[in-house]
Structure formats: structure tokens, C-alpha cells
Length: 329
Length: 187
Image (cartoon, rainbow over all chains, first blue to last red; front, side, top):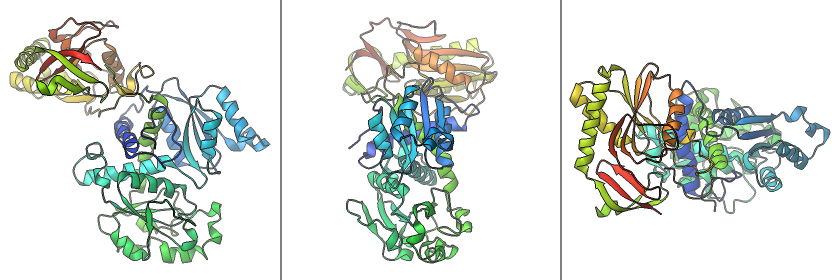
């Protein structure tokens, strides 16, 4: 069990303790203030070098990680994989060694293969590795920013702050995660984060898009989707991932929408206070109706906004932190 | 004084063991009152003054100073809180401390900022705060108000308002709050 990510890596949210997750969320609260200022920059990681390696396309994760690193005053080495030697057949190990030879402190990596981030952390043990999504395995900063966003919104509704409420707001919180669970690294990280913080998690989706085994997953599968919508405090939708061959798992997009899409009709089943989330990019009209996505219950834009402070916290704690106790007189 | 015999430092790191109480709550209250009067004397028009408490030890002192200024001059001085964790030059020496909120709602350009802290020691926190403040505007002047100056400066920094000068040894630790000032050690 990892009790703090200070001075370490962020590869997965499995086996990460509640305290470690809260430490990231609380640190991110401090960075929210930095992001609201005219000068959105602090010198915490001045002179440190963060390499950003995206072997798979991404808009928000890449931009938000690079923005986060820059706001901490780190230098960012950004590898455009499409125009790099990777296209000439260079192996992952050689690509990492080359970048490491330039002198880096951390690597932010997205890769199509599950376990790629862990593998890199073994190649370069002296470099902090932050997983920005590996295949169908994990997307830890998404799990962190989703729980951060939920805590922030619930705290505001109760007239308190995320920092003051700690993990309290997650006690017994009912979270429903819907859609392509099988291929989703977001679902795996979200489930781990919510469960560690004390929430009750249920999943819903067509049988073909549920994992083949749920052994060890802290979730229950929903029988009746409509009933579950009325039960939930938070509904987390997932993107139907065409690039991972979802097409062959469902008869058609239309049929998926009919049985598990969050349509305008289904939105009426939700509690008025229920929150709707989506990690993006959205397939409007497939897993979520466009009007639902733009409704006041949806907190999708806040998820994107919070990506920066949460990733600042992840970079700051892993790179600047050491694992010993703290004192700074 | 049993409750203050052992206490966590604000960062949740080492534990402080008190040996002697050097100032009572009354001493602290008198010191604050005197400093508030000195602040008014030096900054006749409190119009441009902003009080900034340094997190976390300076916060209660800053709040008290604002109350005292209200009593003395009947004017409401704006207050902010500053956490300098992300501006420290010793991040690699000290592990990351638990950060606290920074709340500064005023543009500091043209203002006289009075920094308030509990204990002035090496001066590195104050140096970090200069960097931080410059990200909120360009103050006309910065003045420094501390409850205790314990010496051992590593930088050319000098306080403008001091509650009490307490020469100490570097192995000792000082804790100052509204209830008093103690000397002891950190383990």
C-alpha cells in the first residue's frame, strides 16, 4: 500500500491509500489559488525538467500536464511522437534512454500498452514517472481530478471547502459509472479513488463491455440502469472507445444509446442534486445527449479546469517531495 | 501549561517539547498592542496599508493586529494570508511541507504591505515571501512585523516591528502564539 506519492511515481491508483489521495487533493487546493492569479506561476520546480511523451493522441491531458509543469516553473521537453524516431522503429527503452541522457527529473507518459508506465519506471528508476494513461490499465490523474471536482462541488453546496471536509463528503457517496468499463482506464482509476475515499461504487453497461472478471473490484454491477440513476449521487459517463474496437462489442451505437446513453428522458430520473461527469472527449449523442452535457447538472468543464491544479500537485509532490517527515522552520 | 508541553509543529512534522515559558499571554498581548501603535505612528494614513499574515504561524498575530488597528484608528485595514511553500529555496533540503491556503484579494501595487509572522529566524521564509508578493503586484513598501526575533539571520533582513528580541541557541526551538512564547526543543 502506497501511503504517499512524495518523492515517488504515480503509476496507478490501485494500492494507493486514502491518505495519499487526500494529500494530492489537499495540495491541489493550494494550486487552485495560483491558477486564479494574474501571474499564474510559482518557482517550486524551477530548473527541473519534465519530459512529456504521448504515444497516443490527447488534447486535455497533454495540455493540462504541460501547463501544470510550466506553472511550477519546470522546463518541459515535449516529444512529438509522430515526427520522432519512434516512427523509424526505435524501441520504448531506447527512446526513454535517449531522453534520460538529456537530463530529466520526471516523465509524463501516455502509451497504448497497459503497463508501459511501470516498465519505464524500471528502465529509469532515478526519474519520477507519472502515468498519463496506459492502455486499458490506469489513468491516475483523471481519478484524482474527478474526486477533487466532486469534493469541490459538494463542499461548495454545503458552504464549506474541500480542504476542511477531507474525505468526509465521500462517506457513503453513491457513485454510478456507466458505459465501456472493459476498455476504460478512467473507470479503473476512478473506481480505485472513489473506493479508497469511502464511496460506494456501482457500474452499469452492456455485458460485453464489462470486464470479464470483477474479482477484486470494489464494485457491484447494476441490474436495472434506470433504478440506479435514481440511486446515484454522482454519474460518471465514459467514452465509447472506437479505437479500442468497441464497435464489435455492441450491435450499434444507436442501440447503446437506447440502453445506456444518458438521454434527456433518463436525466429526469436523476436526483436534482446528482452530478454528471465525463472525462472527455465526449461522443455527443452516443453516451450523452448534447443537451444533458450542457445542462447545469453536468460538471464536465470543471473537470477540465481542475486538471491543471491536480496535475500540479502530482508533479510537485513526486518531484519536490522526499518521503521523510517534514519540518521547515 | 501541560497542553503546550508537547505539540506538533504546524507542518505536522517534528514534535516540540517546551522547557520554559518566556512570555505569558499578557506579555504577548502587550507586545502586539505596542507594535500596532508603532505601525500607526509609522504609517499615518493607514489607507494604503495591507496586513499579510504568513501561514501558518503568523495568521493569529495578523488577525489580532488588524483588530488592534481598528480599535486605534477606527479604520478597517485589509488582510491577506500568504503561504510561501512553493517559493522556498530549500525545497531540496527540506521535504515538501504541508501547504496552506494563500488568500490575497487586493492588488498590492502601490500598497504598503506589512508582513506578520510569529518567529523571525534565518530570514528565508521572509525572502521567499518577497518573491511571492511580487506575483501579486508591486508594493510601494514592505515592512516586517514579528512577535519574536531570535537572531541567527542568514540573509540581510531586519524587522521593522518586534514584539520581543530573544537571543537563542541554534539547537533550541521557539514556539510563539497568542497564549505565550516557549523555548524548548524539537525531536
